[in-house]
Length: 215
Image 1 (cartoon, rainbow, N blue to C red):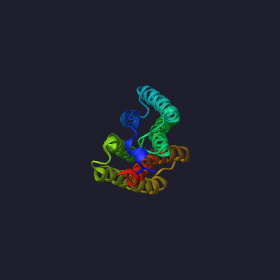
Image 2 (image 1 turned 90 degrees about the vertical axis):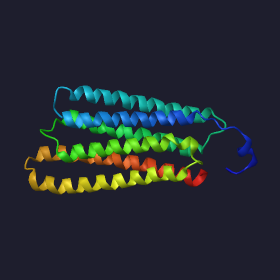
Image 3 (image 1 turned 45 degrees about the vertical axis):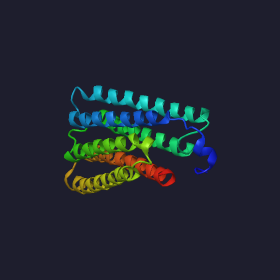
Image 4 (image 1 turned 180 degrees about the vertical axis):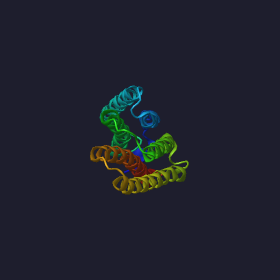
Protein backbone atom coordinates (compact mmCIF):
# COMPACT_ATOMS: atom_id res chain seq x y z
CA UNK A 1 0.00 0.00 0.00
CA UNK A 2 1.18 3.50 -0.76
CA UNK A 3 0.95 4.66 2.88
CA UNK A 4 2.98 1.82 4.37
CA UNK A 5 6.08 2.66 6.40
CA UNK A 6 8.15 0.68 3.90
CA UNK A 7 7.06 2.84 0.97
CA UNK A 8 7.45 6.08 2.90
CA UNK A 9 11.09 5.51 3.77
CA UNK A 10 12.32 3.56 0.75
CA UNK A 11 13.76 5.79 -2.01
CA UNK A 12 11.89 5.61 -5.29
CA UNK A 13 13.74 5.52 -8.59
CA UNK A 14 13.24 8.90 -10.35
CA UNK A 15 14.57 7.84 -13.75
CA UNK A 16 11.07 7.25 -15.14
CA UNK A 17 10.13 10.94 -15.10
CA UNK A 18 12.69 12.09 -17.70
CA UNK A 19 11.87 9.06 -19.86
CA UNK A 20 8.15 9.87 -19.82
CA UNK A 21 8.92 13.53 -20.52
CA UNK A 22 11.00 12.51 -23.51
CA UNK A 23 8.13 10.37 -24.83
CA UNK A 24 5.78 13.34 -24.56
CA UNK A 25 8.32 15.56 -26.31
CA UNK A 26 8.56 13.09 -29.20
CA UNK A 27 4.78 13.21 -29.61
CA UNK A 28 4.87 17.01 -29.65
CA UNK A 29 7.63 17.07 -32.28
CA UNK A 30 5.62 14.63 -34.40
CA UNK A 31 2.53 16.85 -34.05
CA UNK A 32 4.54 19.83 -35.28
CA UNK A 33 5.60 17.84 -38.33
CA UNK A 34 2.01 16.71 -38.86
CA UNK A 35 0.90 20.31 -39.39
CA UNK A 36 3.56 20.65 -42.08
CA UNK A 37 2.46 17.35 -43.59
CA UNK A 38 -1.15 18.48 -43.85
CA UNK A 39 -0.11 21.83 -45.31
CA UNK A 40 2.21 20.26 -47.88
CA UNK A 41 -0.20 17.50 -48.99
CA UNK A 42 1.11 16.53 -52.44
CA UNK A 43 4.11 18.85 -52.56
CA UNK A 44 7.64 17.58 -53.10
CA UNK A 45 8.39 17.96 -49.37
CA UNK A 46 5.53 15.73 -48.17
CA UNK A 47 7.54 12.50 -48.38
CA UNK A 48 10.43 14.04 -46.43
CA UNK A 49 8.03 15.13 -43.68
CA UNK A 50 6.49 11.66 -43.65
CA UNK A 51 9.97 10.18 -43.15
CA UNK A 52 10.71 12.62 -40.31
CA UNK A 53 7.54 11.51 -38.52
CA UNK A 54 8.44 7.87 -39.16
CA UNK A 55 11.82 8.41 -37.50
CA UNK A 56 10.12 10.01 -34.49
CA UNK A 57 7.72 7.08 -34.30
CA UNK A 58 10.67 4.67 -34.16
CA UNK A 59 12.27 6.76 -31.40
CA UNK A 60 9.03 6.60 -29.43
CA UNK A 61 8.79 2.82 -29.81
CA UNK A 62 12.37 2.37 -28.62
CA UNK A 63 11.77 4.61 -25.62
CA UNK A 64 8.56 2.81 -24.67
CA UNK A 65 10.46 -0.50 -24.77
CA UNK A 66 13.20 1.00 -22.62
CA UNK A 67 10.65 2.06 -19.99
CA UNK A 68 9.21 -1.46 -20.01
CA UNK A 69 12.68 -2.94 -19.48
CA UNK A 70 13.43 -0.47 -16.69
CA UNK A 71 10.18 -1.37 -14.95
CA UNK A 72 11.23 -5.02 -14.95
CA UNK A 73 14.61 -4.23 -13.39
CA UNK A 74 13.60 -1.57 -10.84
CA UNK A 75 12.61 -2.55 -7.32
CA UNK A 76 10.78 0.62 -6.19
CA UNK A 77 8.91 2.79 -8.69
CA UNK A 78 7.37 6.26 -8.11
CA UNK A 79 3.92 5.04 -9.20
CA UNK A 80 2.39 1.62 -9.80
CA UNK A 81 4.23 -0.25 -12.53
CA UNK A 82 0.97 -0.76 -14.38
CA UNK A 83 0.28 2.99 -14.40
CA UNK A 84 3.77 3.86 -15.64
CA UNK A 85 3.58 1.20 -18.34
CA UNK A 86 0.08 2.30 -19.41
CA UNK A 87 1.13 5.95 -19.55
CA UNK A 88 4.24 5.14 -21.60
CA UNK A 89 2.22 3.04 -24.04
CA UNK A 90 -0.45 5.71 -24.44
CA UNK A 91 2.14 8.43 -25.04
CA UNK A 92 3.69 6.19 -27.68
CA UNK A 93 0.24 5.56 -29.18
CA UNK A 94 -0.14 9.30 -29.79
CA UNK A 95 3.02 9.30 -31.92
CA UNK A 96 1.93 6.07 -33.62
CA UNK A 97 -1.38 7.65 -34.63
CA UNK A 98 0.35 10.77 -35.91
CA UNK A 99 2.56 8.57 -38.06
CA UNK A 100 -0.46 6.61 -39.23
CA UNK A 101 -2.08 9.84 -40.40
CA UNK A 102 1.08 11.09 -42.13
CA UNK A 103 1.42 7.75 -43.88
CA UNK A 104 -2.10 8.01 -45.29
CA UNK A 105 -1.51 11.56 -46.48
CA UNK A 106 1.68 10.45 -48.21
CA UNK A 107 0.25 7.28 -49.74
CA UNK A 108 -3.26 8.43 -50.71
CA UNK A 109 -2.18 11.67 -52.37
CA UNK A 110 -5.60 13.29 -52.10
CA UNK A 111 -6.20 16.10 -54.57
CA UNK A 112 -6.72 18.63 -51.80
CA UNK A 113 -6.98 18.28 -48.06
CA UNK A 114 -9.90 20.20 -46.52
CA UNK A 115 -9.51 23.11 -44.13
CA UNK A 116 -10.83 20.83 -41.37
CA UNK A 117 -7.66 18.72 -41.71
CA UNK A 118 -5.50 21.77 -40.96
CA UNK A 119 -7.80 22.71 -38.06
CA UNK A 120 -7.57 19.22 -36.55
CA UNK A 121 -3.78 19.11 -37.00
CA UNK A 122 -3.53 22.34 -35.00
CA UNK A 123 -5.79 20.89 -32.31
CA UNK A 124 -3.52 17.85 -32.14
CA UNK A 125 -0.53 20.15 -31.63
CA UNK A 126 -2.38 22.01 -28.86
CA UNK A 127 -3.17 18.67 -27.22
CA UNK A 128 0.43 17.42 -27.33
CA UNK A 129 1.63 20.70 -25.82
CA UNK A 130 -0.83 20.32 -22.93
CA UNK A 131 0.08 16.65 -22.60
CA UNK A 132 3.74 17.64 -22.32
CA UNK A 133 2.96 20.07 -19.50
CA UNK A 134 1.00 17.45 -17.56
CA UNK A 135 3.72 14.80 -17.87
CA UNK A 136 6.44 17.32 -16.99
CA UNK A 137 4.83 17.98 -13.59
CA UNK A 138 4.31 14.37 -12.53
CA UNK A 139 7.54 14.39 -10.53
CA UNK A 140 6.07 17.17 -8.35
CA UNK A 141 2.54 15.79 -8.37
CA UNK A 142 1.84 16.37 -4.68
CA UNK A 143 2.73 20.08 -4.90
CA UNK A 144 0.01 21.05 -7.36
CA UNK A 145 -2.28 18.18 -8.41
CA UNK A 146 -5.06 20.60 -9.40
CA UNK A 147 -2.92 22.15 -12.12
CA UNK A 148 -2.18 18.72 -13.60
CA UNK A 149 -5.85 17.76 -13.35
CA UNK A 150 -6.71 20.97 -15.24
CA UNK A 151 -4.39 19.92 -18.06
CA UNK A 152 -6.27 16.63 -18.24
CA UNK A 153 -9.58 18.48 -18.44
CA UNK A 154 -8.20 20.60 -21.28
CA UNK A 155 -7.22 17.45 -23.16
CA UNK A 156 -10.78 16.16 -22.83
CA UNK A 157 -12.17 19.48 -24.01
CA UNK A 158 -9.93 19.41 -27.09
CA UNK A 159 -11.07 15.87 -27.86
CA UNK A 160 -14.70 17.01 -27.79
CA UNK A 161 -13.91 19.96 -30.05
CA UNK A 162 -12.11 17.71 -32.52
CA UNK A 163 -15.04 15.30 -32.54
CA UNK A 164 -17.38 18.17 -33.39
CA UNK A 165 -15.11 19.31 -36.24
CA UNK A 166 -15.07 15.76 -37.61
CA UNK A 167 -18.84 15.32 -37.43
CA UNK A 168 -19.50 18.58 -39.28
CA UNK A 169 -16.86 17.68 -41.86
CA UNK A 170 -18.47 14.29 -42.57
CA UNK A 171 -21.85 15.92 -43.19
CA UNK A 172 -20.30 18.43 -45.59
CA UNK A 173 -18.16 15.78 -47.30
CA UNK A 174 -21.10 13.56 -48.21
CA UNK A 175 -23.06 16.56 -49.42
CA UNK A 176 -20.38 18.04 -51.66
CA UNK A 177 -17.82 15.40 -52.74
CA UNK A 178 -18.91 13.59 -55.90
CA UNK A 179 -15.75 11.54 -56.45
CA UNK A 180 -16.23 8.32 -54.45
CA UNK A 181 -12.53 7.48 -54.29
CA UNK A 182 -11.62 10.98 -53.14
CA UNK A 183 -14.41 10.82 -50.56
CA UNK A 184 -12.97 7.63 -49.07
CA UNK A 185 -9.46 9.10 -48.95
CA UNK A 186 -10.55 12.31 -47.22
CA UNK A 187 -12.86 10.56 -44.78
CA UNK A 188 -10.13 8.20 -43.60
CA UNK A 189 -7.44 10.89 -43.31
CA UNK A 190 -9.65 13.21 -41.28
CA UNK A 191 -10.95 10.31 -39.19
CA UNK A 192 -7.40 9.36 -38.19
CA UNK A 193 -6.63 13.01 -37.44
CA UNK A 194 -9.57 13.17 -35.05
CA UNK A 195 -8.52 9.86 -33.52
CA UNK A 196 -5.21 11.35 -32.39
CA UNK A 197 -7.09 13.59 -29.95
CA UNK A 198 -8.78 10.46 -28.59
CA UNK A 199 -5.31 9.14 -27.77
CA UNK A 200 -4.26 12.36 -26.02
CA UNK A 201 -7.48 12.21 -23.99
CA UNK A 202 -6.59 8.64 -22.96
CA UNK A 203 -3.25 9.98 -21.70
CA UNK A 204 -5.17 12.53 -19.62
CA UNK A 205 -7.37 9.81 -18.14
CA UNK A 206 -4.37 7.75 -17.06
CA UNK A 207 -2.79 10.80 -15.44
CA UNK A 208 -6.06 11.52 -13.60
CA UNK A 209 -5.96 7.96 -12.26
CA UNK A 210 -2.43 8.58 -10.99
CA UNK A 211 -3.61 11.82 -9.33
CA UNK A 212 -6.39 9.98 -7.50
CA UNK A 213 -3.91 7.39 -6.21
CA UNK A 214 -0.98 9.57 -5.25
CA UNK A 215 -1.89 13.27 -4.86
